[in-house]
Image (tube, rainbow, N blue to C red; front, side):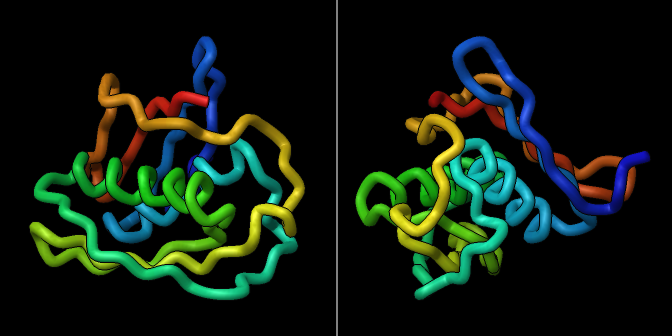
Length: 139
C-alpha cells in the first residue's frame, strides 16, 4: 500500500531513478530531495548545522524538480554539504528554497555522489489527488 507521502530509488543501468509522491508539490519536491540524498548518504541521524537558502528560476513543474535536485548536487560539489531537508515556496517563475545541511564529512557515504539530473524521462505531475515526481540521476 502506498502512503500519502514518500519516495524511493530504483537502480537504472549506471544511474539511479528516484521517485517521489506527496499531496502537495512542495512536499513532493522535499521527498525527491530525500530520495536523491538517500542514494549516496546516510543522513538519518544527522543534525543540520546551518540552512542554505536560494532563489531558483523555475517556470514549469519539471523545472522546479530539476532546480531543487540540481541545488542538492551543487551543494555537495561546491560546499561539501548534504541537504537533510527542504522547505520550498513556489512563486512562479521563482522557487525559494531553504535546505538545512550537514557537512559531508559528518555523514556516512553509502553510494556514489550524484553528478547531474538527466532531462530524459523527467516527470513532475499532479494526478489522482497527489503530486508524482521521477528523475534519472547520473552517478
